[in-house]
Image (cartoon, rainbow, N blue to C red; front, side, top):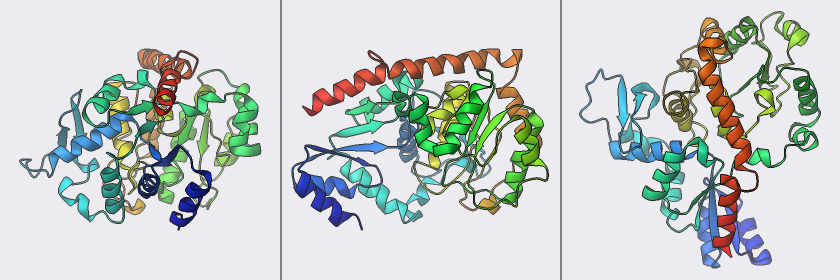
Length: 360
């Protein structure tokens, strides 16, 4: 559908370089026909990209006992052990159409690309930035968190309209670091039962929160839930693009600043990486709290329901007191690093400058 318009645009504009998404590998072919460089953007981080490549080394779950519950991902800088249920069987990856053909094409053109750009920053995952550059794609630049380049209230409100502005006004009245941001992305799907459990758990935690959810359907909302939170928190359907303390980093990176309810979807980049992100937060950075969501299925009705009490306990821990003081300090330090990364002289600022020099 977009192939011909893109072809026409290249002919008319004759750019020196095109910057397109991972899921549009065909743009590399069209650009190459005209001698135009292509930069690829991928929506996941370096850790997840390295983990995806590690999965290829497994090929299949050979040598594992039938009742083995975990799998160690090979050839990574850290010891990473994943619940087997959270991983697709490597021997069946070819069956995951229509995405498999897109993945295959994307892998094929990766050697033809000028390079790869990620919405990450060096300090978040330094060992995996280096590992990726040394073993996968040498020309890879981290340019994030991109949402922090425009931090003024007017710019942020444009991302979500009036709802975002109301949300920011409400955040201004809250204590720094006191608000939890809950978001699963636009492609997520939960059963009504799971939505109710999360709502009850969030309310029971007694911590203010912002929950970005779809406006589609409201039958899951527990009786009295909206009235309760409107008294002290915020409308759950506001859908604003902000995180706790206003520290929104955009995309997958916001996970590293607070907590993640891990959810499975059948799409690389907004799916498989979520379980890898959990391991980055919990095992590598040691700042995250797992709520125990498991299951390699795309059907909401087949997913294990995470109970309200588990949600409540996770929220209380991640927003908690003295016991989690160390984790909170690490999260705050990462937040500072994220801001510094996009400032003049920061790691992402410098990587963008290096990318521009390479393109000149």
